[in-house]
Length: 522
Image 1 (cartoon, rainbow, N blue to C red):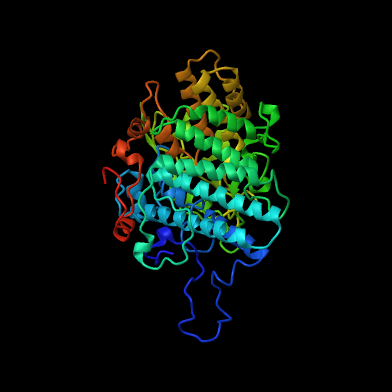
Image 2 (image 1 turned 90 degrees about the horizontal axis):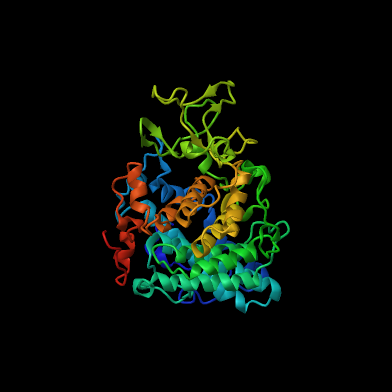
C-alpha cells in the first residue's frame, strides 16, 4: 500500500486494466471489475472489503483500529505519550504537536481512510446490479454506507474540509483523473448524515453467527447521534443539532433507560467485562473492530505496546505510556490519578505491575518521589487478554468503536446543552457513574458544572479508546471557548496552538493533486 502514489482515491484493490490490447482471447485467470461482481457471494466479498481497514491484518502496516489511530492521534493528547519502545520519529513529533505535512503516520491515516472509502464506493456502485436476494442486497448497501460514514467522520474531524468522493470511476487512469478539490466540512457532514440515515433504514437490529460484529441499525443511529453532537459542538457550533442528538440517541437507547430502541443494549454490570475477549460483542458493544488472536495477523497489537518490556515471559515493547506531568508537588501526575477512590474503571483500565508467567515474580516501575511513597507507573490494560499470556504481542480483545456507555453520555451531554442539568441528563450520566461504583453526581449543579463533570467522566470512561483527541477539539469551557490549547499546555505539551486542532494535508497529496490546498498554519 505504501508504494501506491495516488492512494487517496484508490477505488479497488482488484486490477481494472483491460487485457484486450494484448491478447486475442478472453483471459481466463485474471479477475477484473468486468468479470467480478456477478454473484451474491461477490456482493458479500465487496462489502467485507469495506470492513478490511478496521483491522487489515497481515499487511505489515499499522491499520486504523489496530494501533494507527493511537500512534497517529492518541499520542498527541493529554493522556498518552510514546513510551521508551516508540522509536518512530514521526510519532514522537506528533506527540508533542510539531507535526509537519511530510509526517508518514498522518499520511497513513489519510491513505487508509480513503482506500476504505474507495472500497465502499465500489460496493455501492456494483452491488445494485447483482441479481441476488433483495433483503441481503439492501443490508449490504446499508453496511457499506455505515462504514463510509464512519471513515468520513474520522477524516473530517482530523482534517476539516476534505475531498468528498462518492463515486467509483473505473476509467480513471492519470493523476488528473484523481484531482478533487476539498469539500466544505458542513457538506461532508451532510453526506455522513445521509449515509447513516439510509443505513439505519436498511440494516437489521442484530445478527446471528457468523455475522455478529457487522453494522446494525442501532449502530447507525448511535453513530448518527454522535455526529449530531459533534456538529453541535465546536468548531461548527450548529447548536440546533443538540436536539437531533437527543432524539437520535433515544431511538437507540433501551426502554429501561428512557429510549425506544429494540436493540437490547445495556451496560455490563462489571466494567472490565466490556473489554475482556471472553465477553466480546456483549450488550454494551454497539459496534466494534473485531480481533482474533493468532489468526492471520488478526490480533490486537495494542496489547504488547502497553506492556513493560522487562518482564520475563511477556512480549511487550512499552511503546505507549500515560502522559506524566507536574501537578503541585507531584512530578508524575497522570490521568491515572484523576480517578476517585472506589472508581472501578481505574483498576480495569490500568495495571501497576505484571506477574511474570516464567518465574511468578512481580514486576513494576516505581516512581522516585519521596512526597508520594509507594507510587508506581500505570500501564494501559484494555487490550489485555488474561486467558492468553503465552503470546502477549497481540490479543483477541475487540476495539469498541461505539459502546452503550458513550451513547448514554452523548444523551446526557446534549440534554444538558438544551435544557440544563435536568433529571433526564442526570439519569443518563448517573447510570455510567453508578456502574463505575461512584455515587450519583451532586444535585443542583449549574449547566457549566454539569458539563465539566460529564467531560471528566467521559474522559475516564473512554480512556485509551481513540476518543480523547476528538473531545479536546470539540469541548468548551464555561465561557464557550475551546479547551484544546489550555488542556494540552496544562500537561506540558506547549506546542499546542489552535491551528493544530487540524492535521496538515499530507505533502504527497499536495504534490499529486493540484486542486488540493493546505490547512492554515502549515
